[in-house]
Amino acid sequence: MPKSPNTIDGRLWDELRHAAGEGNVTHDLIDLVSYSYDASDHFGRPQAGVWATDTHQVSRIMEWAQRHRVPVLPRGAGTSLSGMTVPAAGGIVLDMNRMNRILALRVPDRLVIVQPGVVYANLQKALAPLGFFFPPDPASGSVCTIGGNVATNAGGIRGAKYGVTQDYVLGLEVVLADGRIMRTGSKCMKSVSGYDLTKLFVGSEGTLGVVTEVTLKIHPLPRHTVTASIAFEQLSDAGRAVSQIVQAGIVPCVMEIVDSVCVGILRRQAELEVPDVEALILLESDGQTEGEAVQEMERALAIATECGGTHLKRARSREEAAKLWRARRALGSIITRLRPSFSVEDVTVPISRVPELLSVVQDISRRHKVEIATMGHAGDGNLHPAFTFDRSNPDEVHRVEDAASELFKATIELEGTITGEHGIGLSKAQYLAWEHDATALKMMKALKRTFDPHGILNPGKMALDD
Ligand SMILES: Cc1cc2nc3c(=O)[nH]c(=O)nc-3n(C[C@H](O)[C@H](O)[C@H](O)COP(=O)(O)OP(=O)(O)OC[C@H]3O[C@@H](n4cnc5c(N)ncnc54)[C@H](O)[C@@H]3O)c2cc1C
Image (tube, rainbow, N blue to C red; front, side, top):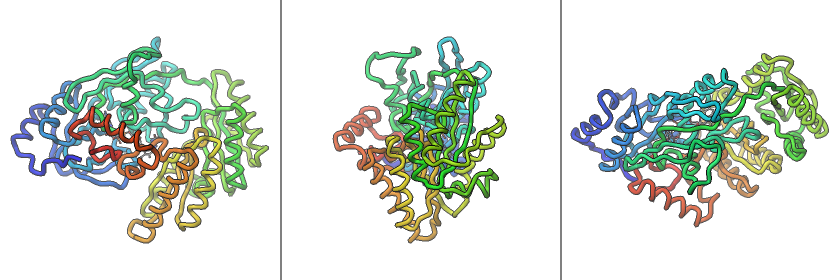
């Protein structure tokens, strides 16, 4: 991985200021410290921060960076949970937040064209009055950016029915490592013209190029939703209910599972009236008619009840449903405050193997004596076991690390993936080779070299550098 020149001399900075434009480069300590973190516990300080303002400016900056072999890290809101937004090799952080315009809302074409710094929630606000939405729904939506969503292939609780970011990206404008500007994809609902470079960039964690424009497919907003929760005395019964609902051909737009630790939090800290049980399933059905949504929910609840579900509770109003989802969303942040440190994983398995994964997590927690709270988007097989611990206790840290590696190994044995949402970044770089065979890894490294021969784009991430 290239090391940022420790002593970038005054002439180089002058050149960068010239390329980026007056007022767009910062060396202020307060900025550099802010750019040193994301939402993980990794840290790395850059030598400068640069505000991106337009595609041609980004092109000039990349041309400068490649010429001088300076690492560049594109940054959206910095909410990565895997350290992918931490400058591991110094260099410059390229802050995309000022490129935040919605360029076109083309409802008859079912698409929008946006700059990468558009905040996810602002796009939804613009689309809702038109009766449309961008379906992937990361829980960080109030702050994260569309560029970040694209670079991480973000998903969320609606994934089972509506998919993830890659299902909606029609085309991109990208600035390559040497400053060339490239367009991928099209403005069409379908295209099989050439290799799919758009998909290659989705989820590439800022390691292949800087995304400067995104064309997204949009979806009509469902007019009706029905929300319910159902409790289970046994976690395994909840897991069985999930796979049987799916097997019956029912795809609720949300099917979340939470374990007993999370149930306790919902009862005590989120003030939700739920019974003291091993697991809860939270369900939402949607449709263009009320009948469609209600019928789907009835079928799902009948199966859940057959699998041992009790204390069935239907939300009687929008407010009640909103309270449930607020509490579910709050779980993550409450868990972060339970102990001094936490790490949340996003292991994902084929849906029928969710019950096995749940029992693996329980077993690992018991054997390694680590506290794990598990919640997850069970409808697409994606679980979030959250480890809570004290980083100042080396023994505990060691047990958590062992437990996490065991979790990854078991997930892969269940035909799963070590990351369904949060990406590889720094946190899981050492495990990438567990999941992919040597030939696949070689091809990934070859692609990285093709797009970024000098390894200046987000070096150190995904363990793909030479
Ligand atoms: C509380 C919380 C809840 C979360 N919930 C979810 C969830 O439900 N689902 C989910 O998928 N994730 C979730 N995340 C993780 C994170 O929010 C997502 O990965 C999100 O997509 C990151 O967006 P961002 O703007 O913060 O990107 P950043 O963290 O700034 O960047 C992420 C990566 O994208 C790259 N990048 C950013 N912009 C560009 C660009 N223009 N061009 C090229 N590369 C770029 C960066 O280099 C980095 O590698 C959550 C995080 C938090 C803190």
